Image (cartoon, rainbow, N blue to C red; front, top):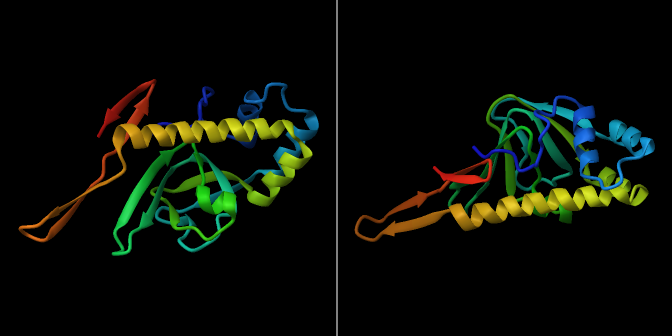
Length: 190
């Protein structure tokens, strides 16, 4: 299980106010009261039971999520229906099906709760309205995107995603997935 992608130093995101304060800490100028108030009304909460889904294959990803508590698994299915896990994330992490959310197209990714989970979320449309109305919030979006990309890049470079080996003598196909944990600037391969 990976530690947070978010560089969140204040402990768990226990409330919407905690999330807004964290987002505000990424802003170079601090949020106006109008933006804080707008975010407070725009951020929603959703609970998902163990093995329930936040996003299913073929559906449109309409939300970006911040895990308040719980564990989420992100995966996709190969043509032979093999499930390939790409992320296992716990609080306080940001979770988004990147292609589907930003392009607003059907998702090949699936987001599933491994335990009872609670998330905060902002819809795609609301996020775009916030960017238009409060340009200072675009910096926050950019910085979160950078953290997400750095984490993803390190996962690809250091751990690899998947290696597939075909044993020609038996015809057995083996899939090996390499997981890693990031903790305080060090990587541990699992």
